[in-house]
Length: 346
Image (cartoon, rainbow, N blue to C red; front, side, top):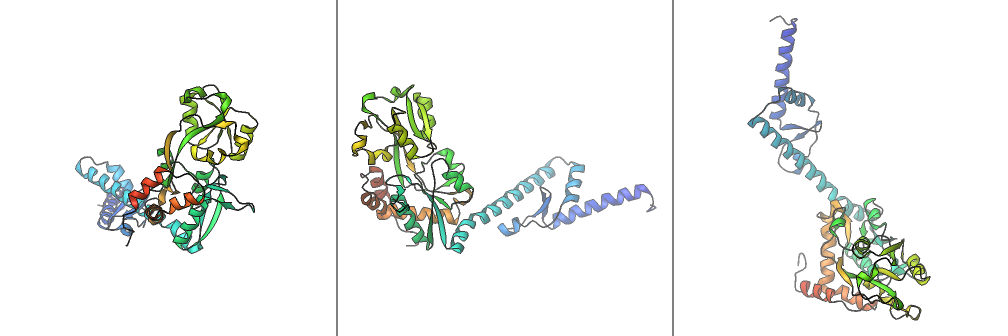
């Protein structure tokens, strides 16, 4: 056929496309979102983004094959995409731990409005049970500790924005939170929900909260539950000092918070007119949190091993005693669960 003939050129172009497709497939290349992913063994081979597959994509779309061949191609395509994503995830998992080691420090978000777990020293430095935990964690990782004070309302944002490496801030473990941050197992403490109310109000059942003004702190998961289930009219504040001032000014008849948070108030004369009359509800554990992508990687596993050893050695029970916190059955149960388990590598 005459090479100047249009029909010849169209036939040659189809032949070239077919040849390019065969070459790509022979080299193990398939198109994934406009780039080629090499199908190979191991994460490095599967994740190597090497060149454009535009010709192969157009050829496959034009011919629109059906049947077994098309199904096999789709399986290969999705398999390559999954392998590439897994490779990217594996790389991300090492970032925080490497960053911590290279910087020589770990940045931990802690509370300063939750005595005795987290509060400010007379010189303005954070102190408390969770601050002691953060110090021990940094020591075990072999790095310095930098503390960043967080609130219930911003602790997860700080982690997701990369402003801190770890949340150690009375964070209740919930399924919703585990969808956005990497919750560490095992958890390290547990608390129930309570109301610290004026004795004169006479609260005896949670249903008695309906229609009553109740002070609360922004962020805890149970705020919405108490509003919807018991009809309380919540007045929320950014942190403990604002909520405490509102309670003292009698802007509300009760204060909704963790049962453990009210323990320091019970023996103080200025709070003698208040009580925890309602039975605590919704016991829930507290968890440490790392970035979601890090939970199952080296960083998340390192933090998990430290928490396990805290339970194994009774370290948290010792801290509970040091800070004058009444002994909890939950910590005793966790100690009994882990005390005879072997240390990693032991």
